[in-house]
Length: 390
Image 1 (cartoon, helix red, strand yellow):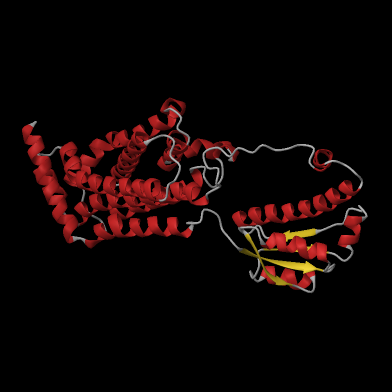
Image 2 (tube, one colour):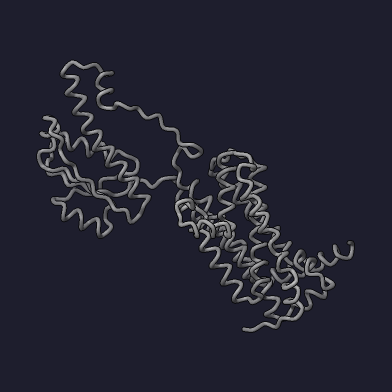
């Protein structure tokens, strides 16, 4: 046991020297992950996009329509940047990405409102970007509703109806809205908590496969095994332990930044956060070792790791719910560590549910940690006998 511990220390110091001499480790383990972290969190710092440009085609041009447009311009997400003489001009501006949406108020809108003839207001918005399209659709629809409600309220008041009777007629059902876990609809807290861990996993996959492949490329594999007394377990622990420590420091720094500085919601508490961070790092390293053991080639293992990491962003269920995918894709989603990480984050960290509620995803991440055991013999054989092929 003492000999194995001494061998691990020898390999650990050897790995630290290799990492110090190779700038690739510094860039891929520190510089690039930090750039990604600050890029995404500052990109969506306000939580929701603000002052998105919209246009107006007001063919009525009355005090009522101008008041409606001023109210629309006061919305947080909407900013009226131009008025167009025709729908054709507004449509061209939207096609050229000068505006994301426009509202068309035909001539006679005010007269129809006052005489309760149900005027037709046209709303045009682009769904090229789902976020901007859905937010602007909400604002435009609200303005159309407010316009009819304001006129109806004034008419009913003039007829002698009380405010209670007026509101019961204009809004027969009152909605009591409760947005659980993210009541601010903060896109930063929603997207960054998936994108940044996904990129971190990508780097962990690649660096793990890269560090093992470089042993074969520079013919250091036999020396590594000699220092480990031909024990693949000792060799892997000594080689990956420095990377594990650095990755944990990076991931925990990211967690402290988003929860203590940016104040992202985290009902699960810090013990849950620390446990998930540890499982993220170990599961990602386990997957990287497994892929290299399966394909003991620097080029092939890194290609598979990068492909798997990129597909993870689609298969984790953040952009499109897994339950809405085809059954074969739903089955394939369990093969991606980010899917299980994201489910554990949503349930245990964001909502504060006990881990037993998502035990399958917890067990799946634990399975990724133990996955290298299935290729242990092949990995040992590669380190002892394989010759690097460019």
